[in-house]
Length: 112
Image (tube, rainbow, N blue to C red; front, top):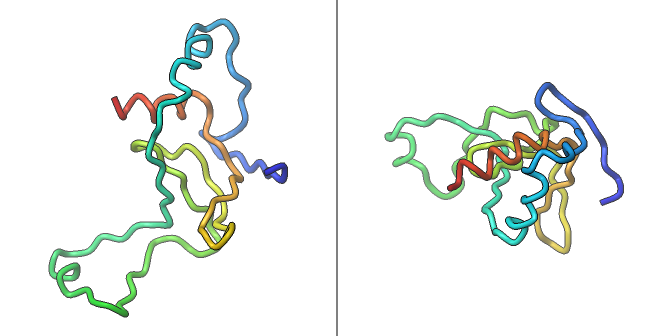
């Protein structure tokens, strides 16, 4: 993963961790906590009627163009963005943008 591309938007970017603020000093205690991460390709609102009518072969169009980055979501926060790739036959995410450390911490707080 040495091929990292930085494309910061307003709340994204690479900020160095603040030194001596207490949060980073004790964050090591949480390093082994497992969190569920979800890739969000897009979204679409459907009426219940439409959901009940879905069947094999139906296509649900999302609100995101194929060239737009995919969101990596932890809790209810976007912590990174990137492009979908295939690794050993599995979907994977090549990270292109990373949320600020503060936003990443907020995503963890919302889980507890």
